[in-house]
Structures are given as structure tokens and as C-alpha cells.
Image (cartoon, rainbow, N blue to C red; front, side, top):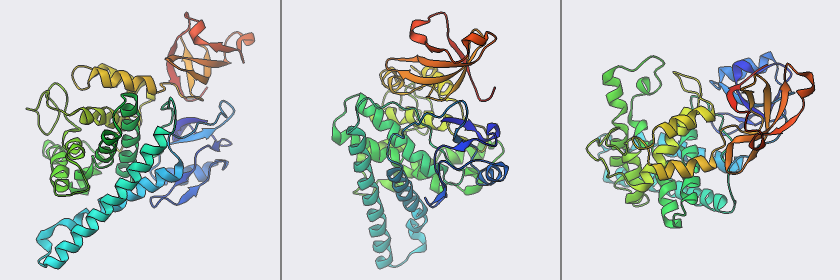
Length: 369
């Protein structure tokens, strides 16, 4: 399978990963043959990239966590975020009503804590996890799906850094809740197609502080997790927002989530741009070392991210087109490939291990030939 923009999907290819609707119900199951009508329907759902199986790639790629756990986590985040408007006590004069809203809120945070523990246990049960799957997101559910992805990516970094389990739990909770404050940003700003005005961007930049303020009275959310919510858009050199004067004061867990947050955002379709390929997103992350991101964290992250997942079509420096067949541990830029297009007919279908062919390098990702 391979992850492609829907604009590159050809009739006759097959859906390689199940698509869910905004409520987590199965919409299209993997294995469905794709035709013009189905492709049009998928576009109407504001899904702009998906996994396909075609003549170039039929290898399966396992998700990092079980699909049912992912959907459970998305639903838990969505239910919690959509209930935030109930917390506006200016509309409630009754002490009984206020207590009821607070109890409901803590129950929802308790559900998120249960999900966090499940994700941690699943990831700890695996060895040498490689990040080679980009989650399919719809525009409507982007914030909830993104929150789960950021939690999974953050935990993979945290496990690689050998954090204690208590720290992993705080890391996961903070990552799952990092965009809580976006629920307090007007939807016409949050989902605006055009470029934001400076005033609108200022409203967006309020979301870390507003999320932190909302969470600081919850006994379910630890101070460590709350600091992640506050600091996930700050930079290690003191830039970013909201606390630009806090250079050097970001917590380790916040620094981890900031890397995971940017990577998942870059590899996701957004209203204003299409997703970057994993290799381009990794280059962006590595370019930010020392200013936006901490070296140790990025070093651990790049060990686990596959820049060219199995099934990716790539163009080599000699002009040949190949499909990635296998990723080699510790050599992420030198996978095993199969040539599928060459000016030399005898080269087609040749299997090459790039770790042994130092004169060949991957120049770019391609989506069709």
C-alpha cells in the first residue's frame, strides 16, 4: 500500500485502509475497489489523502496502535472537547448545575486517562516501533485525530528516551489534551480557508493559555500535563507563543510534544495546504534543531520515523523510479527498493539495497509514473 493524495488515485486501485465517518463508524472498508463515484464521495468528506493498493505496491503496513483503540481515543477526545462550552459558568447560576458540569468534566477526563493507559500499555508491549503510517484525517475531525496522533508520536519519543511510566502517562495526557484551548476559538477563525488576519492569528495564539486555564482546576490532569498544554507552541530559543519570555524554561515533556505536534501537522492535509511527505517533514524538523526543537529529542525521533514508508514511489539520482520494499533499521534513508521504471529494460524488477549502493540516492517522492 502507499499513501497518496486523492488527486493521484486511479480507478481500479483499491482502498488499503478503512475510512471512518466523523462518529467513528465504518464508512468504506479496506479492499473496496475505487471508481470515480467513490473517489468523488471521499472528496466530499474533506478527505484529501488515503492509502491505496495498486500495481506498484501491495505490501501491508501495520498501524502503530490498533484501529479500534485509535477510534476509541478519537471519540473520547471529541466527546470531551465538544462538551467544553458547558463549562461557561456565566450561563449557570445554580450551584447544583455547576457541580453537575464539573462532575461531567472530570468523568470525561477520567475516560481520557483510561485511554492514555491503554495506549501506553500497547506501545510498551512492542519493540522497536517504527513510524511509517500517516493517519487519514477528515477536516471536520482533524483536531481530535491530530490529538491522538500527537500522543502516539510523543510516547514513541518518550519510550525511546526511557522515561519513567509516570512521566509517560503525563506526556500522553498532555498530548491528548494539548489543543483543548482551540475549542474556545471561534469556528470561523479555526476553519478559515483564507489567510488569517493579524487579529485572527492573535486569537489562535491564545489557545495554549486558554486550554491551560481550563484544565488547571481539574484533579484528573497533572501539573506536568497542563504545562504541555501551555508550552507546546513555544520554542527552545524563547520564540513561539504564548510565553516568549520563557526561553530555557520549557519542560522536557513540552519539548517532546512540540516535535510530535509539528510533524503530525506537516504530514496532514489542512484547509490551506496539502500534506508534506514524511521525508520533507523530517527535513523541516531537523532544520529546527537548536532554535525550535531540542537536539536530543529530534535525534530520538528520527530514529523511529521512516522517511520513505513501504510502498512509497521514489525517483533516484539516475532517473529511475522505484518502489520502497523494506526499511532498514538505523539506515532510514537507504531502504531496500525495486526498480519499476528505467531506460535500461534489464533493470526493471531488480531489487536493490541502497545501503550497498552508495552511488544511488533517493532524490524525491513521486506519486505516479
